[in-house]
Each structure stands twice: as structure tokens, then as C-alpha cells.
Length: 329
Image 1 (cartoon, one colour):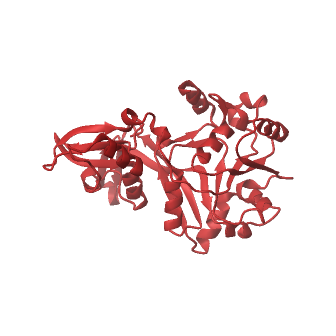
Image 2 (cartoon, rainbow, N blue to C red):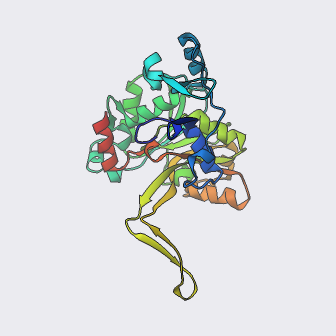
Image 3 (cartoon, rainbow, N blue to C red):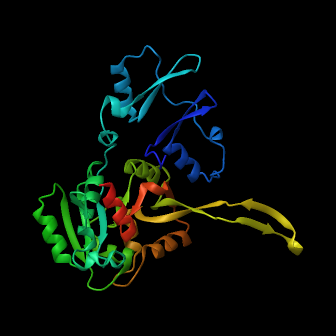
């Protein structure tokens, strides 16, 4: 899916059509701790919507619009796949697909010095570095904006005046409120400056990450699980170019795996929080968001982790990844 930039795959056993596999299926499996080595046929859903050969194109389009399907298979009563209608052929870019709307405050952490992006950040602050015709901040705004979010709180420090001047001059269709720490307070510590201003579920995002995901799906997961905080995690794969040996007592061989691939969940830098957590953050002292997570965990609060694929997460605060992203623009 990462390689072909699709979130829905057709699944076959030899030439026999079995069904569709969505990114949501994989995410739900990972959330349920299903091993990544599990065969696809054990997690594939058999109830995916398809259409009959005599279905009109207009009805196909209405159905695809209603469920935001990247493509729609045409399947006979006997289970034979005849053809596939692709979104791009019927509507154009899938990026234009309707998204479930929600309206939450978004907090953007944009106060860092951008040391990983030097020497670029000697001239421009990291949030104002360009991505195509937009700055990084504007790209983040627009990704939330297409879901219906229009209220942004922006934590600033390094070159704060330049950031605010530029964004104000763009006449963006968003409400922007800037706040600045008098001293370093950490990711969570700075949120205390928003007490009395946020009284509902809200999102916190670093200013140097981009996530290709329907954010409404993350919010649904957060709400349905009753989470106090949801951490968005990116899968990260590390191939080991050697055989891995596991031994037991007296050096007895237990297992030997040839060139395995290890997979970890990486903290992406985006979170969904409930507003009552603002009262649990100590004021006027350095407090990282990981300390807040630990505090919630110690009192047995609900903490969720929502996974996204490796290439759905871009760490543009890293010079090499930023340059790679520019090449794609």
C-alpha cells in the first residue's frame, strides 16, 4: 500500500478473487495486536461492498461517494471479478474525496529552533520552510481544514515575530492565536498557557510532521475507545541483514530466523487529548507530553495508540526527508 500509495487492495488466491483489504483492516488488526506475519486471508473481510455487472455508472458513483471508496469491484453472483471502477477514472484525484467533518481546536507546536534542518533554519524558521507553494504550517492547516477545523493555537518562540507576520499577511481562512513561553516548558508544559481557552477534545501536532490519514478515523477511534489521550504512531520497519539466533539453557538452539524484519511503533508527534488533561499538567515548569502520558498511565487512565503506515508519516524536520519531500513537489 505504501509503495503504490493506495489504501485499498484487491486480494486474490491464484486467480480467484477473495475480496478487498483496506488500510482500516490493517490498522484494526494492529490495534488488536494481531501479528504482522498473520496471513492476509485470516483478517480479510468478506463483507466488502461490490456491484453487479448490470449496475449503472451513476449508481456506482453514488455508492463510491457515500463510502469514499478508492475503487469499486464488479463481481458476478458466482464471485468472479469482471472489472474495477477506479475513483480517478470517475471523479479525478482521490484527494478530492469527501471527508467526514469535525470541528476541534488544533494546537501546533512551532517554537523549536529547527536544529536538524540547519543551515536552512538559520534563515527561515522551520514552520515557514516551503513545501511546493505552501509553507509547512500552511500545509498542516489545510490538512485539518479540509476536515472542517478552522481554529489553530500556535506555540512560537524562535523567530516568533516572523512567523506571526507571515501568517497574518496571508489572510488565511482560519482563526490563528499565537502563544509564547517565557521559558522552556516542554510539549505538555506549554499547554498550560491554553487553560480557559480550550474546553473540548483537541489535537496537538508538532510543526514538522505530515500524516496522510483521514483524521476523522483517528478521532472516531479516540471517542469509541473512551481515550483520554490517543497517540498517533507510525510503523517503522528495520531489516536485519543477518540470521538471528535465540538460545536457551546451555546454549541450546531455540530458534533461528534468517534476515528478519523488525517492526516498531514510532511516536509520530501527533496526539488527541481531552481538555480535562490541561488541569493535570503542572504550571510554570518543564513537562514533556511523555510525562503526561506516564501520569495518565499510572492512574490507569485510558491511553490509545492509533497506527499509520511508515510512508504515511513524513518527518520533515529531518533534512534528508525534507529534501526528499521537495523532490516530490
